[in-house]
Length: 461
Image (cartoon, rainbow, N blue to C red; front, side):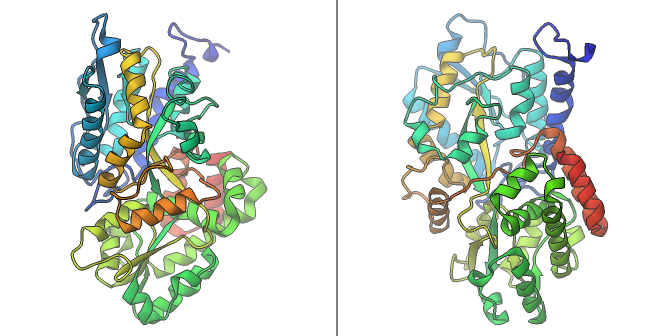
């Protein structure tokens, strides 16, 4: 009984433990963290490709004690310290300063750890009632420990009523911004997860038409044909488990649909036991067509096999396309292509970054203006082309985006469902994400489907 009693700042002991422990599961996360030739991702589960050696310390500023600080000072924390992420956040801040020259902006970045270092700093500051004005955060279930502790403000009226945001955002991003039923953050960008990239010449040589692969089950036959032609079927890394967790989620989504996916991530695993087991078994079948060195390479190394013409297919978030765009003589559609992961036509699986509004905010008025700007056309048009992501708003002009991202924008605007990422913690709680990562680590060690099913069930239920 005493574990549920609130302490002086409104945190129950149980919620305190969630904040001090659970959010650290970001160690499993890839994507939205670093960059590789215009894309986004990680070298390993916790390493940013743009700044994997950054210092995890930062000065803990409260925004100052000046009586006017809530109007003219803004402290922002993020982990975009280099590469495309660094260029993108600077473009965003330049636009904000042009719109609001009266507000003094202080950046307080925390580099490295694929965002885990920043998560640790934010947890400490929130627990000490000393939050920054706002920070880069994965939305959705990642924010649940903060909403459960009443540490985030409802910004439905103060922010989301501005700039036609309510009508410009689709339901998926709005749901992610409302982990407890009220809008507490503003998504800035979207990275798609249900992608299947391919080398055009390899598939032509193997006689495989990627547009004809109707389901994850059908993909097994395509991989076999590629293997018979002398190529690696699927370029995949298994050195760390996050790529497999991400792949399994797309197989479940493609083979059984968005409703089953939502039911599973909502904790109803046993009711969908066949779907979960079959999806795990398909990943096991795919593993027969991985490169021989899958257990010792990074996702970038795996992707290079597609670029070099050694492998046919590659599943990854759309940050993988940054490597293609950065490669001379490797052109979209003529050398590399993309289809939604088999079975997921009409679906846009979401990974996002957002900025929340903390309670006990040191600069509430300036923060509201910043969050309103983050949700504007101007901000998202400045940020996303440089980041290699697409806007969550559906009314941002496409002119600044390349052909691949323009196609992604069309797919998103026309999508029937926008499920949230498991592997990046948008769909499941931090505790569940940690347990899911352990399940995938065990799975790739021997591909025991029954054991993996029990582990996934324990993680989500």
